[in-house]
Length: 114
Image 1 (tube, one colour):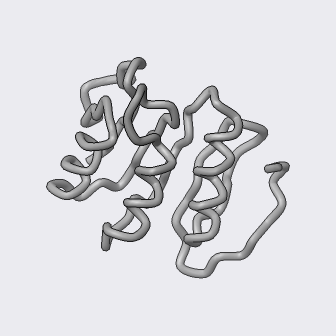
Image 2 (cartoon, one colour):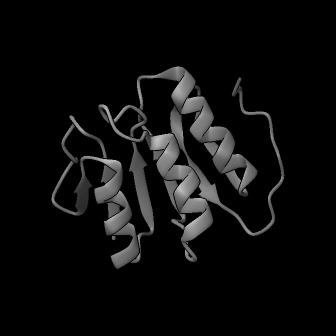
Image 3 (tube, one colour):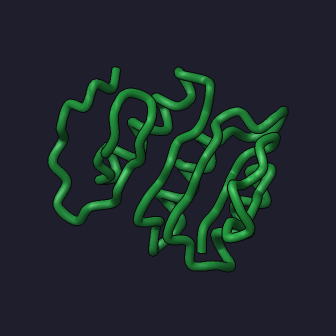
């Protein structure tokens, strides 16, 4: 299954489970095997997408294989990216477009992330 976390933008198609806030994303993650997640950072007045990434990395045994960061907030997106990298995800893509893949053997590479 695929998780789409964004309070404003709708998923690309019906194959995504749409969470509009942190609490809904946590509920979906607890009740489903998520293999792909697309995450925004700014989620209105509640906890952020970064808070969700931190929760996911600590509390979910089978974390998603791929995580797409789709926030327009560069500071928030960077915080999410660094947390994913610290957990063993590597960046695949170019510039701000790309994804993070969960790898068993993590090698830090410079992909233009600042």
